[in-house]
Image (cartoon, rainbow, N blue to C red; front, side):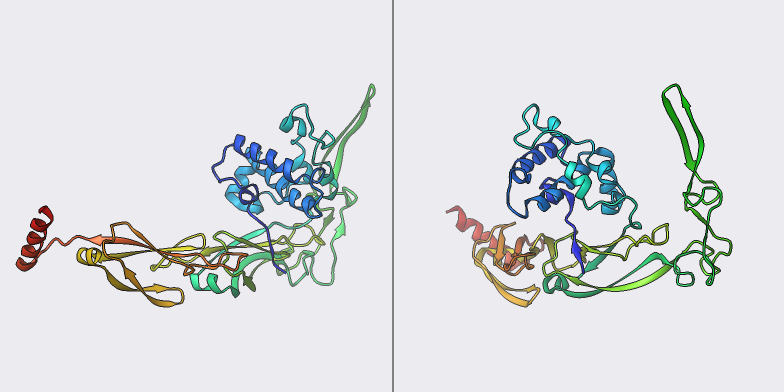
Length: 363
């Protein structure tokens, strides 16, 4: 099953260059509208979780930078406490809690949030460039990618087939060592470090798998068939659970694969949302007197009438000749921007005719 995860900027409805004040103001407005303590719609809580997650990332400069550079994979390993712990109603609404009950508005998400602490492997992102016709029609598309997957020889254990990793005797399988454990006055002091023998894994491999050299992972080339939504928006992400990177520890599922949809460059059109743009050049005389042109669309050529007196940079709109609007039954438009070509190499007869026209326009 493919699950779409929306871009955080899209969730909040702010531009990618929005400053912190704008992000904070927008989140305050959305909180007043969708917080489940005020909005009793059954879907309000899930929608607000999405809003809260977006704000938690974009309101933190470091997390925002990681998200801008790496997308969802840049923030996938943060726990709920890491994301939401710094946000409080007092900072957003001052002394009035507007009926939210005070304290951190994210307490419920610490218990019920969808974030997991190191519960899966890393996420993987790939970009697919699709022709406009595929975006217009939607449908199945095969994507190919490489990822670190569990080794087929040892099934991810890192140990040679027929053997198993053994519990680390140094740390007793905990992956940690206590270097100091004492009491000074009324204070208990415990110093814990990662086990130097098993490097925090809790197990040691006596007979490493020859295929993966004990890593438990292999570089693997895979192909998947994904369903492209009709009218998929530029930069839309499709999440495919379980097809990301293998986790460091056995028994933990792989991360997710995010397929990012981009429009392939098309010499005929430029895409702007569901609208398409195309520049058409007509000669001066045709702009003055009008003419007809055969213009390409995604459905084949159509005849377009250029009205008499068409001005340079005029835009003629062919309604519903653009891309389907995602999640909508309507289509965008095909916009023709008219460029008028001024002749520079006139014949003697043409020069005389333009001269007569010039004289005529003066009287």
